[in-house]
Amino acid sequence: MMAAVPAWHAWAVLALLLVVVVLFAIEKLRVDLVALIGLCALIGMGILTPDEAFGGFGTSTLVMLASVFVIGGALQETGVLEWLASRLIRFLPRTEGWQVLGLMIVAAALSAFMNNTTVTAMLVPLSVGLARRTGVAPSRLLMPLAFASILGGTCTLIGTSTNVAVSGYVSTKAGLAPFGLFEITPLGLVFVGVGVAYMVLVGRHLLPRHPEEDLADDFGMRGFLSEIVLQPGSPLVGRSVSDSDLARMEFRVLKVVRSGRGFVPDADTLLEAGDVLLVTGNVANLMKVKTTEGIEIRPELKWGDADLKRVGLELAEVVVSPRSTLIGRTLREARFQQEFRLTVLAIYRAGRSLRDRISRIRLHAGDLLLVQGRLEALDEVRGRRDLAVLAERGPADPAWRKPLLAMGIFGVALVLGGLEIVPSAAAFLMAAVMMVLAGCLRPLRLYEHVEWRLLVLIGSMFAFGRAMDHSGAADLLSRWVVDLVGHHGHLAVLAGFCLLTVLLTQPMSNAAAALVVLPVSLKAAGQLGIDPRAMAVAVMISASTSLVTPLEPSSVLVFGPGKYRFADFLRVGFPLTLLLLGIMLWLLPRWWPL
Image (cartoon, rainbow, N blue to C red; front, side):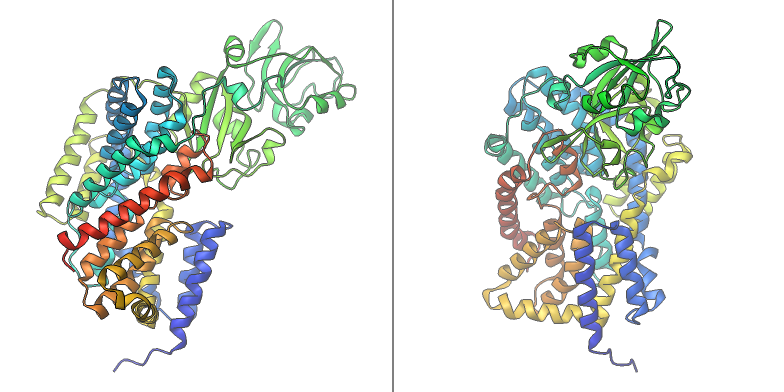
């Protein structure tokens, strides 16, 4: 006979969940660390045993998610998707409306089968390049692109990690059959169609129109360039660029001319007497160190993009990816110049350009950095997940053997999983292994493409779902919801949980929000006689259609390049979110009877 669960367990779980949500919102700690702290607390209070708490990490859900990440990495590294997307985008007409339509269709189609953050990062440079060629403001294209990549994820089970997580929860914890690979496709296609129509006909007219400028002007950098000559006996002589007083006073050395030969220095370049340094920084600070550092200041220069190209440098914008290891670190802590061989000139954040003491500014996801460096250094950055380079580069024609092989392996996995010949998790695991064996992804790069933080988060939130069930917290909350809106009918209950999910996706990740709401919503469905599968679909789709704020990773990627403000997303995304929720509540009972 099982022992009765102490009544305080339910209140303890709810209090702990509230603390976790607050910590997610204030972002002082990484979300995966917060989730693990909550997991330890559940064990420490005796609410879950270690086996129960860690059970979420041994599910087929995490295996399937990891496999999908590996497959997406292989498709990305073979280059075929970027090549195809660039060819499609290049043929779009100069008309803004047609460009929005074409970009959204391409983004949604790719996001149905790939991580939408990856798709957005791949398409942002192509979209900015298209805007610059045709004279359309990038701000008119980038938000539609982000929305399309988010909505495209609602078309298949593997479109987002949220879909996979919800399917895993209902199959392991609620005793329901897992969702089929294409079970939600009809609803997802409707969402994509409505989203595209809204943005083409209405939404794009609500977007700001920020004209393209010289990058130096755009960041307010023009006129911040000077030449200085190191005098014999200067204390700067013999010091490295990164260890000099110039670096400590936030000057960036763009070029060194030595014995008539100019070159771009790296962080370890030693300065010599007679060197002519091209620097950017605060002129007032430069005057302060003139006498003590033994330097001669030449007249201030006026400069821009073309001037830097003439001295052998490239000026470019890069965006800090939501998955970047740079988040929360300063440029100095990350040894940015040494690691990337690029010099950061300014940081654009929340509508303003930051130019002073930038080496001490902690980087945020979505920060737009103005950098300078050699073209080969920028090319190296393109292959890394930390930064997305906005300078368009037409991808070279891929060597077709590996791309076609990768597409073929992926296609077979879709058929096997879609027709349920083998379980979807097994189909995608086999595909991931085959990708590596076929050479589509190097073994050393295998684990770089797996979103470990997301896997830890989902595994931990599975434990919270179990705790809410075992402690009675889910029963308690579901009774409150039923008492509050149950007398208005089943649709009112569905609408309430949909809105709650949308609200929770603001401080939390989509998957975490869905896994918090799901146990409560399924309990409420049981109390009211609603089909639990219909309730699960409502929560799952609601978590992927929150377009109200720029907190979704895809929206974070376009926030800086589009020079958007928070209010822009609220003005454009809020009506679309309400429209999509209304359509879902109308269609849901027809396709998943209540």
